[in-house]
Length: 248
Image (cartoon, one colour):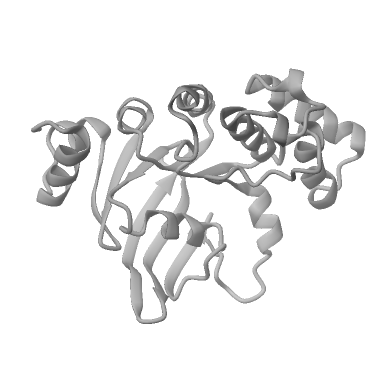
């Protein structure tokens, strides 16, 4: 039986008079890997930032395990330990080592001891192939290495969901593969993942669902094989023709 993690109902987001999200309805179930594709400006990143309350929704509801995260008095800090986020620009603390980056949130938010936090951090750094860089500072790492540390940092918080906001867009082409490989491995672990991405092959191969956003709405939501081989929405067809440069 499907267990909903997110139930999103009538979600809207305005920036002044600009309506970026126009009534999104969506359910995400436990363990799903949902790739969100679409042209720049279609609302993909804003949607993800609303899910993490980095942007406050203008209207509608976001239910996390049935609880409205936009309600007054909702514990946002506790919520963010369960719903991690990996950004385009890594957002690591440049003055801290790789290990410290993965430890500090555990100590401050989860109240783990230094020893506990380091043990958890090293486990996940090992998982993403970065344990040998535990003492390095972010400036000593490549973009792909920084992004792998950022993923380990989210995992160290024992999160149930990770939101990925175009995690490879700031990387050199040769580094994209190493990050996608880590994400592919994670997708097999039962973690719930929402991924805003321009990497169509990843969306096709790894996702359990693909969502095409257009003009602030979910224009199409289906299995990868349907979206990529037989999309029903003309806008999806047009977008994929443009990005894949082939008729479908």
